[in-house]
Amino acid sequence: MASIKEVAALAGVNRSTVSRIINGEGSFRADTKRRVEEAMAELDYRPSAIARSLAKSNSNMIGLMVTYYTGGFFGQMMNQVQLELDEQQKFLITAQGHHSAEGEKKAIDKFRDLRCDGFILHSRNLSDEELINLSKTTSSFVLLDRYIAGIKERCVTFDHQAASALATSYLIDRGHRHIVCVTGPCDRDSTKVRLAGFIQAMSEYQLVACQSHIIEGDYELDSGYDAMAAIMALPKKPSAIFSTGEEMTRGIMKYCYQHGIQCPEDISIISYDSVDSCRGLYPQVTTIEFPISRMAHEAVLLLTEQLASNVSHSKRSSIEPCIKEGQSVKEIGVLNS
Image 1 (cartoon, rainbow, N blue to C red):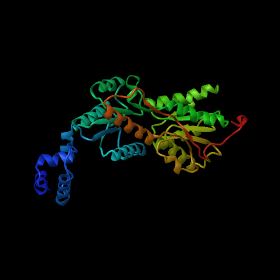
Image 2: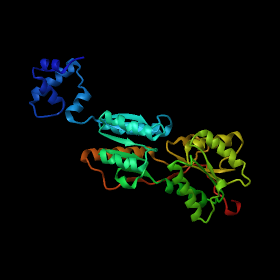
Image 3: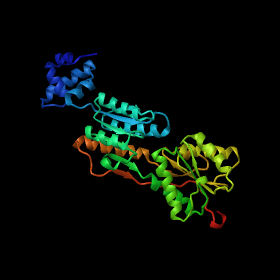
Image 4: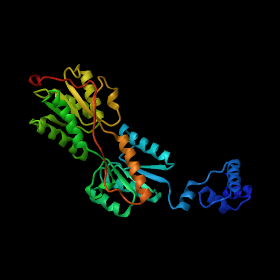
């Protein structure tokens, strides 16, 4: 591999001139720049990104912390962040939080050790206080899909409660009164706010969200399958299901297929969907869109603005929910509900 010394010798200039031209520093005659560029091309010289970052006091590296690498949700998040950073010629460094506060702390320490210019954090386990304290020592980081009042200017959020209320209202407006909500793990913040939206909508229509119609899953396919089995064991069958996770919806639909339950003729289904995985189901499921790609785009934009100005914005970025209609919800008369 050629060295900067060899480039300088071939171009007939000193090493500092080559270095400054590579880093875009100073002004040089067109002939000097041409000779350096031709020498670099002839020797197939590639400047060290690390050396350039040291010279400029930045690394051009951005850290992204996710819970784990598997699954469509995190895959789409990482892909979108990568696409955004490619356009800015920045490098993406990823780390897993491993479902623990300690794992998330280690991921952030990794970003610091590598001198990342900023971080995008999908944090589920660090406390609000810990993240507020991080903001006092780290000028540039963004929280993805999490709202903390004390650092709201760093947050890119989605209104999960409003989304769940919208999905539930969609069912009620089409005549459904006996609705089951299949949730994620009860200790997750995402589960709590989505369930709150379901209860809110039911209450607004003077309907009762009874405990037997709230079934806990874990956002995985098998728990959706088990939830549907539990639904079919209820003394009074519901007319509709609100599933708060697309993988659980796939499990619900699998159970229906295996047991001859027709959707929407026998039961209607509306689902959360972050990666369009419900679009491949038959019938096409009506979904409440969880726009993770758009949120990732907004997170990179917000972080880029932080890096450019070295200050945080005065308000957070919040994305409103919307429904994508499919063929999985049947309109029924109130008397038949």
